[in-house]
Length: 125
Image (cartoon, rainbow, N blue to C red; front, side, top):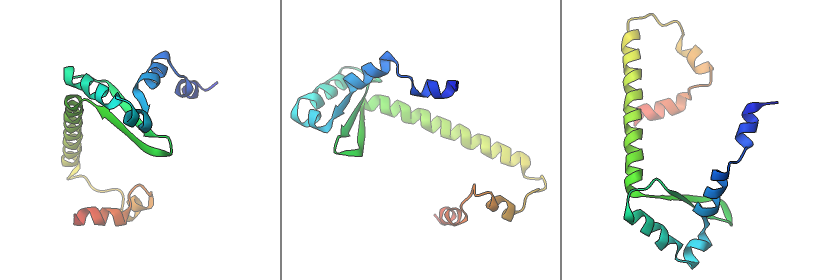
């Protein structure tokens, strides 16, 4: 029995409740006052409540409505995390700068982890 697969496929009551109350079809938004109701919720106080809007005719047409202040907070966390990761990479690179390279560039690019053409494009930008 694979516990990880069982965990991924399980659905909790809170998940079902979220889907029932926070996922809307585009028709629900345009024909009813749902958009106004959602925006009114955001106007009262900062909330972490999330609403998903989807188009039933196009499964890739999905979007999320969330409180602007909550979104700004999430972006702040992302920026802090990105900066911390950048600092960790820079620190590690500075610690290794005088070490002898054990892999050739050819060996590095053969692993298919790095797309050489994409790398050159990004360097050019």
